[in-house]
Length: 200
Image (cartoon, rainbow, N blue to C red):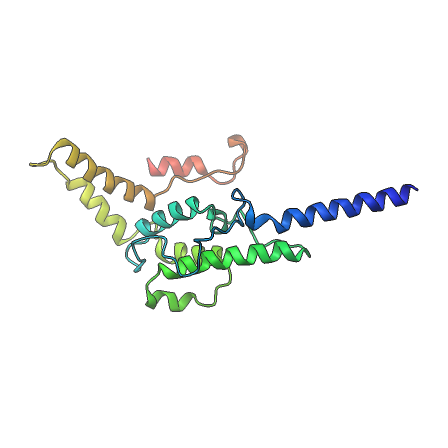
């Protein structure tokens, strides 16, 4: 009798799980939700990535993917599910490939050709970040030079502030504040205090 009840409970759980999985693409709060207007040929951002505009492009793509509830596919928080559930695997694959298409559509052809064989949106995003987001070099030097020489001249205060703020935000994006994941600064092994002191 007990075995029969357990079997029924297990079957009910599996049915409920499968039903939930099948509805992932229909739930608007799900990462796997696909709106009827979502298609692989869509261009999410107006600025094509050319290799020289990584900061502006990545910011625009991050905003667009957040609106689409697909940011988890590029920030590493939603990896390919390691499960035998076919419906869940298909839902992940469809959404991942959709994000892949959106990324490829917004990248210049000469760069796109070197990314054709990446299988996940996260891998492409990381490749571009490592390849084009330099923590130092000509871009940072140019920004520091612009920041040190900027002046109001005949601009209004609003125009001057907007110009300065744009330069400063771009500079900070090349010099992000380091993160510490140690949990306890007394036994920290990532030397974040030294990094912050050096930055200051």
